[in-house]
Length: 104
Image 1 (cartoon, rainbow, N blue to C red):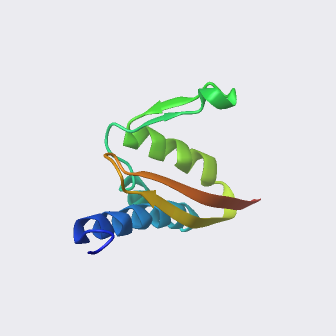
Image 2: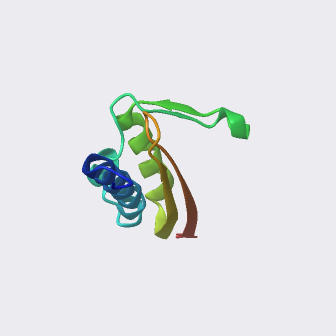
Image 3: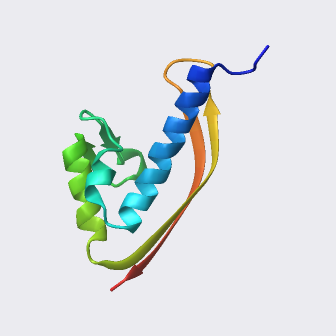
C-alpha cells in the first residue's frame, strides 16, 4: 500500500512550487509571479514581531514586497527543507529559509 496518494503527492509538489516561486519571483523582480503565490484574501501579520504590520490581500502584500525590494541591487532567497504534513486539511508545511540582500 502506497504511503501517499497521487493527489497528496501532487499537492506536495504544488506547495513546493509556490515556495520556490516566491523566492525566485523576488530575486528576479517578477512581481506578477510573486502575486500568483498568494490567494486574494491573504492576511500577513507581523504584530507578533513587535512591528505592528498587518497586510490584507494579495495585491497589498505584493506591493509591499515590491516597495521593500525594488531599490536593492540583488536578493538571494534560499528555501530548503520542505516538510509537508499531509495528515489534515489544510496541509501544514515547515521550511527553512535564508534571505540575502545587497543594498544599492
